[in-house]
Length: 144
Image (cartoon, rainbow, N blue to C red):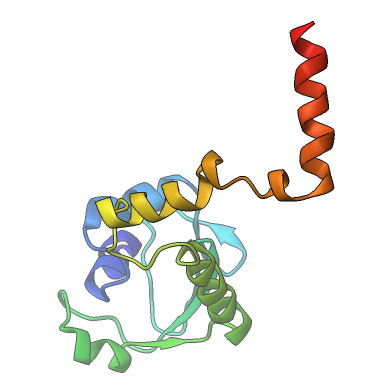
């Protein structure tokens, strides 16, 4: 079976054309060698794939005849990816969700009002301190 069809059939890529594009971009290796879409895979091959900024490593146990259901995939491949790679992926996803949770989208009107209150110039703290006197003196100098 061709490698692009194999990666599609074991549900590593959503479509066969996406799998072929990733192979053309040299993100798929068998052993240490880059491959072409027409490369035939066989049982025992170890495939290294660069996807989502991590390196996956899978070993072929059995070549399927056609696309598999998700529950049948473990019968055909074994995931040999390092645990550190998955931890790295989790850290990257957590960094992206730091400010807003996924699906929250743009700030709401209430969020905008609370941001405006927080950044409002009328509630300037410097007026109540000695620094307020310092800055007020600068404004008078600039006017002259």
